[in-house]
Image (tube, rainbow, N blue to C red; front, side):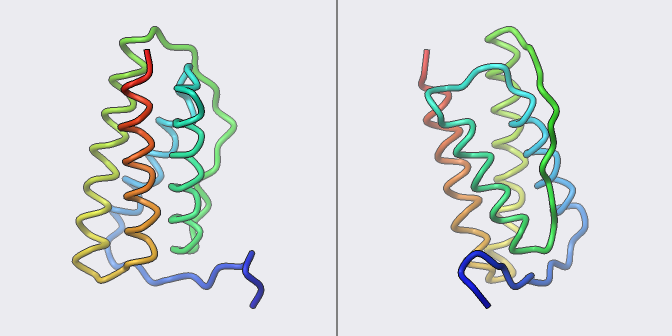
Length: 113
């Protein structure tokens, strides 16, 4: 298997998979770039989803006022924190790594003004 291919990892809880998908959609519909942090967070969520055999990509584009965009990022962070907790309980270190990186990117994005 090449480095670009992922071997899907089983995931037992559908609600966490839905949270991952929802977090990606929220990030994808954000209106600001946040100095690249939003896009980096999307990439990390997409990578975690691929490890689970999921495709979360979306071509949705949003146009939101700054305050609403920030609130949406916080919502995505909350969803990812839920996924992170579940992946750590299930000892899914590869997924936890990418979800944690996405959370960190969102935190960095929220410091951009």
